[in-house]
Length: 451
Ligand code: MEV
Image 1 (cartoon, rainbow, N blue to C red):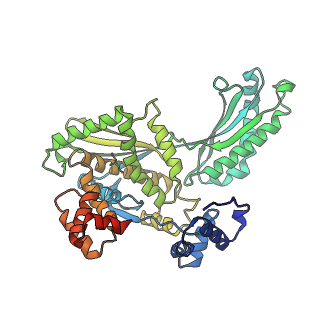
Image 2 (image 1 turned 135 degrees about the vertical axis):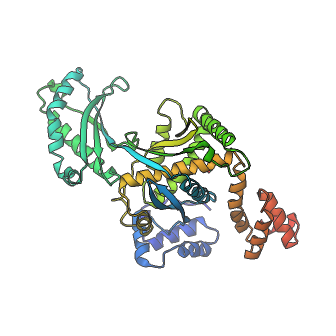
Image 3 (image 1 turned 120 degrees about the vertical axis):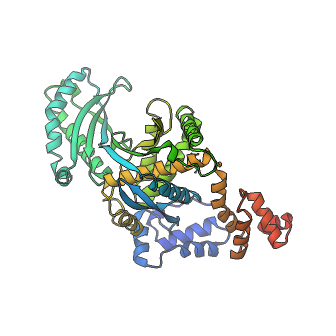
């Protein structure tokens, strides 16, 4: 099909957009339309809400929502909401929750909650000292003239913590920044920070035209952009578990000390080998992202921040760490997590409200702790499997259901095939074998039926 570009798509009605799409891109438009409609919410108010979250909404995209109970965090028991599509993640999380429940639970601490934003600008003057003098004089105005924007946030205990002028002209000619440090309390704060930054750039641009500290020809700036930074190394939370080495069970006949030695070595590999570190940290993010999505937070921002943090020393490394001292095993991580429990879609998305209620309506600090624990728990489960049975046993067991669903196996067939993998690791080809045996067909007939 050759599709022509379309003008004014966003202004079309939902029906017209859908019609254009299915007529231009699908072999069977009726089937495509039926599919899109089958994912509409039966409650038109909820559908309208979803329609209005983004532009050009046509339908909804489902993701499984599961829970992992038995998470003891700072002596409080939680059941964690998780929105994720990967088969084995929730099972691994739940296992870790129960494992550490028997060993004292998780401890988590918020280290700091500062967020950063910049007005990036060009100033072509010759003496940066003059710019610093001008900045020092107008700094109070930058705070006072944003009072209207910051009043509510300040009343809630947050607001502007600091404003600095940063000279970056050694990296890019004439490049400077107004760097703002903020506390946004329970909101993620992107809109708050960006609004303040844009106001600062206006004030700065306006006042500089009459700045007596500067030569007449230097009384102007060119604003490049005003934007918060999603890198939040000072919005940091730590999660840890600890117990005597001899209380650690491997889940196999491996003894505690061997398990710990393997675990420590695996951690060390992730510290020194970036190829492994990325996969290791991906496993942490399995837990983090599932909670971030369930609680309506911005997983792209969190991913970007966390990976920058993992590379803060100049090499990409493991986000988690382990120590064994005097027979005591301690496993911990620190994550830069800028999260909101108010604002955004938190009060709109019904499942986000459900997740937050399930967590006891935490404030952002408590949510940071819960999410960091989710990352640590997930990482523990992955490393425990990797260093003992291997990952495929558990992973393929969970994935087997997806494979059988692809085969369109009946309930009875699924139960029978799952039973054949009770004591061995499933794979796609083994599942095909079992399926063919059960249906009494050849592999060729199976392949033909699926093409
Ligand atoms: C799979 O989604 C995650 C793991 O690869 C993480 C890890 O290797 O640590 C199992």
